[in-house]
Image 1 (cartoon, rainbow, N blue to C red):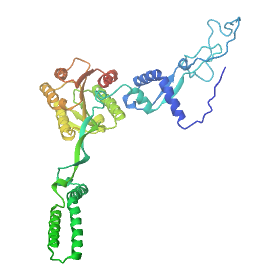
Image 2 (cartoon, rainbow, N blue to C red):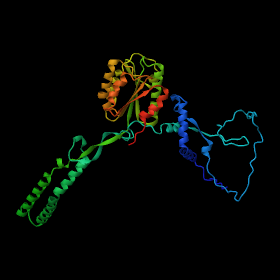
Image 3 (cartoon, helix red, strand yellow):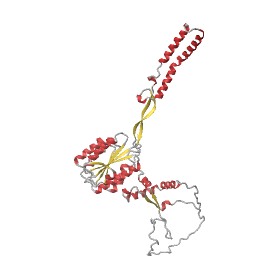
Image 4 (tube, rainbow, N blue to C red):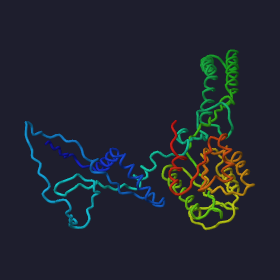
Length: 422
């Protein structure tokens, strides 16, 4: 058998490269292990690592070796240790650590699964591998062009504040030199002729007087050339160029009214925990706005959003009104991609549900990239769901999903926020 030993220098990055190669090779097994781990843990523990087991049979590789060759016979011995009905003694040292799926051996030996630890980042990379905010992929992170002023040469007109003094004086000097060049040449000739004439003739000689008159005319013409003219002025030219931005804000709206029992609140809280972890893990420039509501809506911090015990009646429109006010007050500059997610049991005051639909259709959906409504109820859809159903056909940026219990959170989450092909 040929054995190859790698004696290359063991750089500090070699281990990381080998680990990445290993994870790419066994991606399918790792994804399955992560999915099994998610089923057995709470969302609060979602951002921890995980021990992943790779079955030994998946690690086996084909090997080249010399065959025995020729024609030969082999006798396989039978079982000489146990007979039917014998009791097998417990292995020494307690229960084995293997999975019971190792290769069979007549000596009672086996091969354990290969176990390694996924870091938090690796675990989340696998978990969020095929998730994204809706339409972010389709619109290249929904880039909205914000315009910024940028220097772009010089122009002949502009405001006094943008005058470029150096460029203006340089242009004026060039103009004076160009306009005065013929006069300067003629002036030098006349002055030379005047000097030669004065050497042989008196000052009152008619030719001397004529030369002096012509020189005076030329100097007057040169002095008439303005030092700087409006034609010489140059202004710093500024143009507006689109500045791509990937800023996004997600509004998280949760119903904490009396109709939301502890089970429904726990489901809603877990959904938003998953959403919060997903957003902060995947997109660096995303702000979150937490809004809790019963009859009155309040903007709260993350701690109060998940853990406050305040409760009351149900007026969903109060939360939508507050979202609308915050949206127009803080995020109306056009530099933000706006997303919203609402969780409720749908049990709203009957006269308030049509108002909620109108608020969404007229004051919120025209300004957001995407809005998702999650109704948490084990029974039939409530009045709020029936009103929101009227929005689906006219607004492609609105989606609804139904959650009955904790097991539905992740499938619904994936359905709402799965990647969309371009």
